[in-house]
Structure formats: structure tokens, C-alpha cells
Image (cartoon, rainbow, N blue to C red):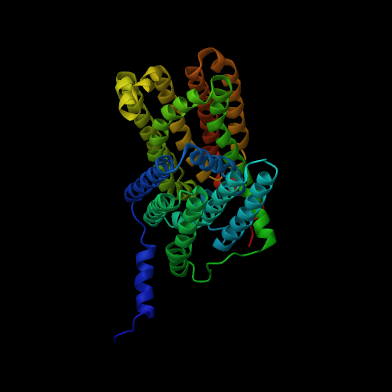
Amino acid sequence: MNQPAGSIADLSLSSVEILETPSLRRNFVWTMAGNVVYAACQWGMLVAIAKLGTAVMVGQFVLGLAVSAPVFMFTNLQLRAVEATDAKRKYRFGHYLGLRLLGSGIALAVIAGMIAFSGYRRETALVVLAVALAKAAESVSDVLYGLWQNRERLDKISIAMSCRGMGALAAVALTLFFTRDIMMAVLAMAAVWLGFLLTYERGVARRMLVASEPREFLRAEWDVSRLRALAWLALPLGVVALVGSLNANVPRYFVQHYLGEAKLGYFAALGYVVVAGSTLINALGQSASPRLARYYHSDRPAFTRLLLKMTALAVGLGALGELVALLFSRPVLTLLYRPEYAEYADTFVWLMAAGVVNFVVSMLGYGITAAHFFRVQVPLYTAACLAIAVACWWFVPREQLTGAAYAVLIGGVVSCVGSAGILVRVVRTPAMEHAERQPDENP
């Protein structure tokens, strides 16, 4: 019997497609592609602002990111990581969405207050606020990605990130070309992200819930006790994200203070090569997180084997980068940037060495998070941040940019040793015993 369009048969076919679980290799390829495209578009926006606007516009845009990103890092509570590794689905999607909306509202209020007392010029204040609005739309998209990641549909995330990145790049470039107004360009970016959230991303999330959880709906749930328990569970990850942001930026603060903005530019450019390598590491970690979470509860040896394979890949990638830096640092820096950057080849070698260690730290961190050991990460990242600050205080005035690279390496070693110790505890802790220490999560 023929069925009309939009019938139950069509929905069933859609459900089969949406619930199909790709292989880990396919998820990794999709995630890698999405991260690369999105990172390239983010860089492209800076290039577009520099070419179509002025240095002041670049500064206003970067200031907006610098002001808003740490606030959203904290209020987002890394809910996507919690949601993606919620193997037993102790919380409904509506709880994650409700807490994310609440956190985004708080972030916007905090940023608005910071702007009010900042003394920024009116034009700069408006750009910072526009960036915050864009980050708010991005934060809601992120919690939808947590749902898709939990179902291991990272292909959907890759498509969404690629489209959002290219849309934002086009919006910024075209708006600047016609208006030469950075605030309008950032508002155009925010509009693209919000529009994509309300169309493609909302539609995919709705179909996924219909297919996998028919009793759930794509809406926020405001059960105070559940939101409080979820916030308490994820709070350490919010603190970790905040401290992690400081870990990345403390060397830059010291370089700017002791050596000036020009040297800071060189240091940031050299470090960007390591950031590019992190794209691959994060793609693998995000792809494997849901599977690690399931293995932790059901097959501890498989959890250990997968994490060891991920760590070995991180070591191999980092060692390859370090070898290239040792042998070809000067021609590589000249090719990527300009000849004057090759004068800092020694700093580049040490930054690549720090990259090897931090790649391993990232992989170990995905394992710790998959097991839902959140609170123990706070003192670890705090200790690493303090180590970096002390090393910068000692080395930067004496060794300049190479001293800052030493500090990054020292912080990575502290994090690596601490993460390895935590993982020993993770592997040895029975899943039921760990679950009993969590906050009250009964429905």
C-alpha cells in the first residue's frame, strides 16, 4: 500500500538513517574534516578583517573574543563533554539544554557588566557585545552537538561546523567589503550562527530525539533539583576550562609585559603550528569519547587499550613535528611566515617539544573525562597553571621567548604526570563505587 509523503514510513526510514552508528575511523575522519574547515574559517575571518578593515578593527574583534571566551568557558561547564559521555543517559536532553540556556544568559549579563565598567570606547564596547551575542548562539549549538556526539553522529557535527564556519567567514568578509563596519560584520556572523541553529541544527536534533528517545522533546526542562545536580556534577569542568584558558594565556601575559607586543606576535605565530596539530588530537579525542565512556562501564580492558592507542598516536604525531622542527625549523618558519621569524628557530623547537607533551595530556584528559572523574582535574590544572606562572616569572626575563617555551613545557610535564596518576586511579576504581560518589542523580 502506497503511503503519502511525510507518513510513518518516511519517519521510520529517517530514524534508521539517523540512528546508524558510524565506525570510529569514519567518525574520526568526519571530525578531523570539520575541525580543519572550522579552524581555517576562524583564521580566515582574522585575515579578512585585516585586509578589508584596519588594525584597530582586528584589535576590537580579538578583544571581544578575549573578554567573552573565558566567561563562556566557565558558564558552559563543558556540558557537551558531560552529555557526550553520559553513557547511561542519567540526564535528559532538556536538562542539558536548560542549564546551557541559563549559563549563556548569565554569561551575557556578566560580559555586559564588564563592558559597563571597562571604560572602552563606545565602538569597541559594541563590538565586544556583538561577539558575546555570537558566542551565546554558538554555546547553544554546542549542547546540540553533545547530543549528536553521544549518539556517535560526528558526521552531523562536522557538517554543521563546516557550514557555520564558511557562513561566518562569508558574512564577515561581505559585510566588511560593503560597510567597512566591524560591528555590523560581527552581528552578521552572529545572525548566520543563530539562523543555522534554528534551521539545520534544530532539525537534526529534533529528528534524533524522535528516533532515539520518543518521550523526549527538543525543549529545555526546568526541574530545579535536576539542574542543580547537573550543574554540581559539571562545575569542576567549568573551572578546568577556565584554568585551562589561563594555562594557554599566562605565557603570553608575561611575554607582553616583559618583551612587548612585537615579541608577543612572534611567540603567538610560532605556537600556532602546535595549535594546528591539536586539531588532529581533538578530532580523535572527540570521536572516541562516547566509546571510551561505554568501555569504562562495560569493558575496562577495552577502555585501557583504546586509550593507549590514542596516546601512542599523540606521541607519534608530536614526535614527527619535533623531528621536522629540529631538522627544518628555519625554512619552515620562513615559508609559513617571513624570514625574520626564522630567528626564533630555537624557541620553535622547544614549543614543538612542549606540544608532544601536551598532545599526550589531551588524550589522557579525554580518558579522565569519559570516566566522569571531573573534580580531581581542578587541582591538577591549577597546579599546572601555577607552575607555568612561576616558570615564566623566572625564565622570560632571562631567556626571553625561549624562556616562555620552557614554561609551556614545564606546565605540560606537570599536567602529564598528574593525568597519568589520575588515570591509574580511574582504571582501578570499580564503576559502581565511582557512581556512588556522584551527586544525587535519581530521576
